[in-house]
Image (cartoon, rainbow over all chains, first blue to last red; front, side, top):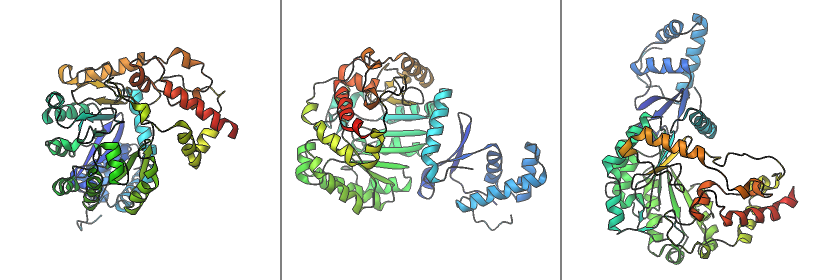
Length: 93
Length: 353
């Protein structure tokens, strides 16, 4: 899976802010903030990956168990799906 | 992940507070021109559309983009492009379009009259987050009285409809004066018919450049303003809740101006906000960061007028250093119009506590 293109992830004053660019404002007119784990997951998702890759990214970057990481990843992906920020590329989760 | 739309205001406040603490220039205003095709009597800038001297002093598109790049590198996230009338610049889209891919949250202010189908189409392809159009009345007659142009009324409505049809997120503003207040309900109806939000304002300031202006001839009588504030349930409740004895914020710069926000004039000088063009730092000459640091340093030195410090009606007062400056050319001399508003509010709302 992969997040839609047309966003810039910026770090401003210690906060990660997701900003839509150009025509992306048509379907996402606003801002979103990401915490540290969200920033790691978003960055991986810009290149496309599987859920297992995201879990692995969290366990290697943060002091969390695989089970905790999997929960965080599922919650994050669900949030992205609700906000229609994931590309529908047909790839397995 | 946070920030659904309902929390947008909370998020922007949080970002501003955080930026102010860290000295980040989060919020910028670029006045890309001071010139306008309308000639509103109450305007605080009001340079003629054909003012060649003013035009020759305006920054070029390349200079605005250079400033935007430098400011974005320092943390600018919110950017307002305003005037004057922004679409009076034939190169406005050359400024605007590159900004849409810099990672900024963009707002445009316009009177709507110069919007063409081509401009609306191009804006719709890469829309700003918000475009606010000011209406000055609800008829050609009122437009003639306020702006000097009767035909501007239909031009403005056409502009709004073109932008709306192009998918641009719009809001309507109305600046109320003695010459158009009778149109308020009709303006409300125009906005409502298009399902657009309406913001109204009645606070008129003197000209920023200090040139003479007959602003008193345009301002609404205070008793009329107080009646409007009382008629609005939210405003009435807010003023009725004020306890004049309560200690209030001592920092005279109580907004984010000069702490997380800045404004740059058409000629390229920088200050904390549009109404306070000091210290007139020059970012194109010294670099954006040193200019921003000069604005922050200046902001820290700003004091309240001495007589305001123990004023009994201070809690009701709309005064700020910028309003004092445009009214008196000094941040430490009180704007007497603000004093009058504060006393009128105290008389009107204190008894409702």
